[in-house]
Image 1 (cartoon, rainbow, N blue to C red):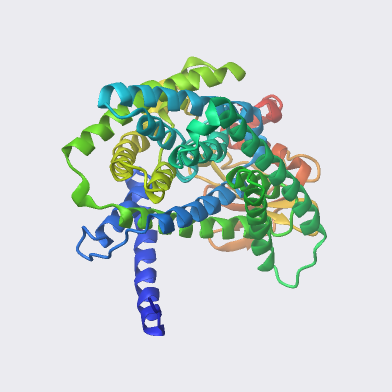
Image 2: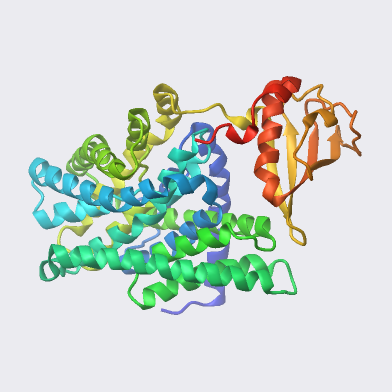
Length: 505
């Protein structure tokens, strides 16, 4: 098959139009409270053979390869944009959910679908392994928009970043028929090796890469985001070359790089977010193309609903309870973690592995997983805010009173904070001198109604003001805490306790 310049022109035009439509769909999905992945999937279905455009796409092996590449990009962005300080207290629970929790979930789904749906044990275990991992793209996009305490977001983000590794190994072994030869003990050992080796290799490349980047003097600031992303992918490639987990490696490497004192960190994170959005759009549209709607019948829908019920109401809660042994939590926290196990592209991508290996019944399995992901994402995604409020785990959204954005000052160990005083903030009427910021932090500019003011101690702050605050990097957390304290309490904040003690959960 040849590919000439005219076909390239058509491909560029169609790709640009589809991508722009997908970008605009983000706003629609945000208003509806839905993960944008659903809209991307439906765009792919409309473009596919069952839709009005009728584009044929049946190459499962290509979908498998491209899917893994897109997941690597998404995990890299997740690591680069995750705050390690917030994740650290819950990383043990996240790791437990990604390993012990996955094992429990696979076993429960396998038993449930074998006896309820009559699936052979091989397909039942395969279905359990495919459905068990949560999706990083769905978790990062949905949960970061919710006002949740750090203990919950940290655990869920760590789980979604690490649980791809064991499930990829398990699905691959089952699909190739090697699980019978390897045995349970050897399979478990292989999963542990891939996860640990991948994590260690990713950590080594992350630490080494951060050391190099701090000392590199690149001729253009635009090269730094490219270099950081290439370091993350070097971890993925190196781990894969030694048969370790590339997914664990790229996530750990990106997590270290994203939390290191690197030049142009804000530009790096913005670039990675843009690339990750592009990867998500391409991934979900491609998976939608791979689906053949004509194969979806009542039996497929029924099997998908039963599988989703077993996974959501039995397997997920049980896996959370068992995993919490390493990190005990309140019942309401465990209940929210049980409901927040968002599935997305990962199960559908994993379903392409048996499809590409020619496993008997793989097409039916792919259809069941696809329908289950759509139905239960529609169920769990929009209800998460309500569930969080009902269980009492949601906290008041801080940006309602005060919005803070940060950018690094690369040549000094300081950050520039852009603070917006929202209409509900009690900072209105407070003088700059009454903020009592930590020594070394100061308000350098006030932007009011488009005009720039150089503030004095007696300058009175107003609703709608934008403040530019310079703070030493080591005092940034204390500076933000102090400003939020004044925003909540106004002048009375001077009698409130130490801001460092506030909201450590």
